[in-house]
Length: 128
Image (cartoon, rainbow, N blue to C red; front, side, top):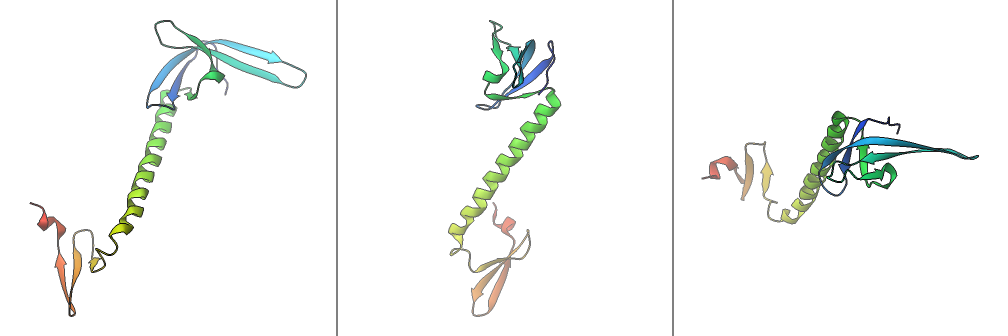
């Protein structure tokens, strides 16, 4: 990714849900016969104003808060989907307990009472 000296970038930590701004203070270009390598030095927002090579940071770097927000929302959506998927897979543990219950719609369930008799039940009516 290309950065300009003097540009503010945003560091999205991989370890915890935090975002830190950093200032690009130096661009280092190294040219060899085989390749050209460009790296950047960032100034961190701590008291010491530490400077680190961007390649040494175990985090994602973004050039705008909007791009950072988008990535955070995407990650949150993926995490929520994983949590819900796990919960749905765990439902199988109740298969024997619910074999006589058939869901009619989101508001009612149909319960097999045996001998060909069924009952419609509104689960919300059970809440006290």
